[in-house]
Amino acid sequence: MRVAALIFDVFGTCVDWRTSVAREVAAVLPSVDATGFATAWRAEYDPAMARIRDGGRGYVALDDLHRENLHRVAAAFGATAPDTLSHAWERLDPWPDVVPGLSALKRAHIIAPCSNGSIALMTRLARHAGLPWDCILGADIARDYKPKPEVYLAACAALRLSPDRVMMVAAHNDDLVAARAAGLLTAFVPRPLEHGPGQTSDLAAAADWDVVAADFMDLCQRLSP
Image (tube, rainbow, N blue to C red):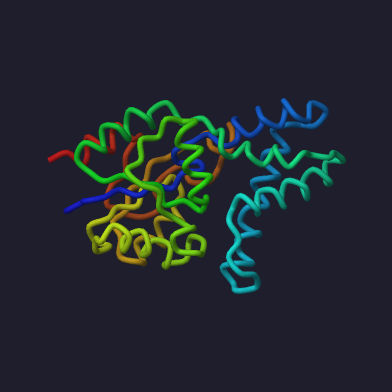
């Protein structure tokens, strides 16, 4: 493998959205089930993007989708949420291996997010979590959402690298299916607590990905010459 750049899924792969969003919800809406609220809010994520991927709506940045979904979920919980709560997605904490792992990977590779989050969201999240990206790639560059191939290919094009020089790193098998179909290399890193202690999905690699690693430090070791 001639890996020049690694691009990363962020929500779930790099950061613990469930615990972090629940903490923010509890601080603003103390009367609701904060973890249930966070889970329900995340559940609105893919349907909102699907309308854009399917052409039923023009490109709308995830910041705005998060805000729209916030109010939909708050109403379902019988609460009223301030718009400012949507910034919770900019204050997600990294998994323990992520910052040291990214710092080690960066010594030999370009590293960047390939997230459905906007450039603004990813920049603020990187500042909060200490994620040492070289640049910000993803949905805003492509004006579309994963798993559309245009998102992965736009990241490669922005780096002026062919897809076979770029590795997509994710804790979600479906993300890697789409990346491989677009010609990228793939690495699976499980996050068995992303959805809490009862998680049943993405506990193991579902295909023969180019690399399967226990965490980001292990990924760095596996990519070392």
